Image (cartoon, rainbow, N blue to C red; front, side):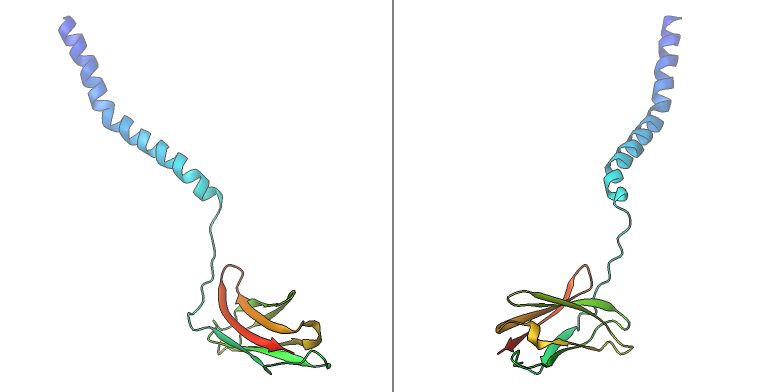
Length: 136
């Protein structure tokens, strides 16, 4: 009689073992995924891979009241982005690509210091294009 009771207890545990293992694996995966899911979905806009820019005129003079223009091509149509001009400071302005993926954005050259300036065009998560120009 003792043997049949011991056998019943063992067979009950053995029959529930796969369920216990699955429940344990689900609990571990939920704990591991928690921090990742807490950040929420990420909406990253990637570039086309063909983005490029240049500045006209180059070189540009900051001694007179005039403008310089950053021209870009190869961007996603309708994409908005930030244009940062970095030299002895940072000048930031914004632009949007047309239906062909091109844009042109101008700013006052008198706000720039002499020397090489770096233009970086970003979409908020990645730098899409970099170009350079000289200020005299």
